[in-house]
Length: 309
Length: 182
Image (cartoon, rainbow over all chains, first blue to last red; front, side, top):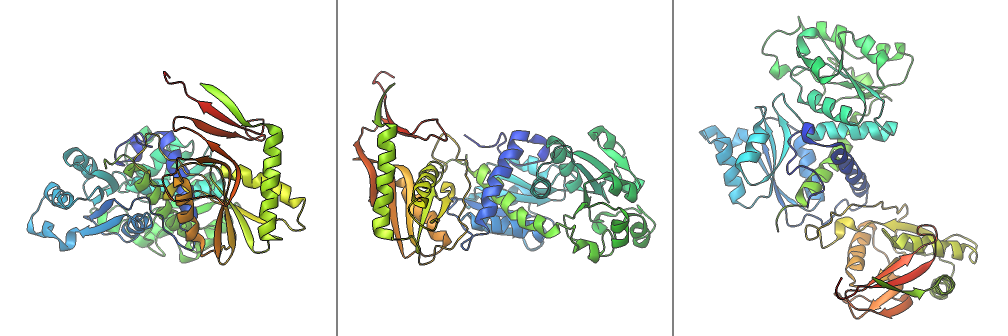
């Protein structure tokens, strides 16, 4: 018996609206837990998780680790940069070796889209996708939607603009699925080179004008320019990008309305968003980080409920 | 399924009133005592008692709700998933006398979880237990109540249900007896 309709969290696409609401409801309780003097509950004392990260990460990895620890689960960390992967070990071999040490759940980040799905088909562990290439990053989308819900009450009928590098962004894709399931309208905005060709098939609005997107939306989710994934020249220069798609105070003031500003981090300060806006009154960036732990606790807790004893 | 009324509305009210006075004997004006109801059903008893105590005391006693879901010992052992409720304790219980309140005391496992959950909020000077119904003879753990509305002797396959006026429409306690062929 599982609280969710899925055995693993591979992407938002597989989740039902019920699943998302169950995660939110559980996360509400965990948010209360992490604001207690003793931020820990004993629910998962007998569960062990492995953080398996083939790409760099601070926030997600720390967030998962804290989430596991606050549920009293044990967590081991594995990062490709200082492991046997360097000696040529394959993904399945690496993970099966970790599982042989009696690990129940794997949090996987990998550069290849579908890595989490692949692993879920070839190993016995529960898999949580913490980002697979440019595909999905489900916990980020859940925490983003949870943060909007916390500020605006509900997602229904709300307008969310996702701005920046949509082409390389797993956050964008997961966010689109999640927000639409919750009844929000989504617009993607960025230079035409960074908008996927067939994005309209996802039933999103498309804009190439930042001001237009901001005037339309209730929430602006500013994505990071992924400098590590710019294998081609998508725009003339960072300065040029900032000029057209950078969010600054003057632009915010000129809107004459209040919008929420989000960013999944890490921020390129002064590129997609200025420090002034990132730390301004409209920004909920740090709320997102706080909610991230609660959401990940909820996901781990709900998936753990059908691990065989 | 047969059912039998253990407390009718009139007895119910008398019992809650008596429990309030028993508390007053030991806790004076409640200046250093707090009532904490266990989710999901203990909170109704707290609300009812606070209502009554407000008529007697000059200052309303502190009270809160405690959710024990994450402290339960049957996670991953039951058929039905555990869905958490809200915890609402917006005061410190450090050095306070805490009265844990629940509707029915049966195996004692919920109370064990409640004690565990409670200690995450600080170190109370004393913890007492108040229950409306004490089902004797089926305790799994060495836990006893300090204040008891009514003790009943029941069999394992029977079920005690406390109804509340604001939830089920009437204040009463019923005992459901399952027929052997059911």
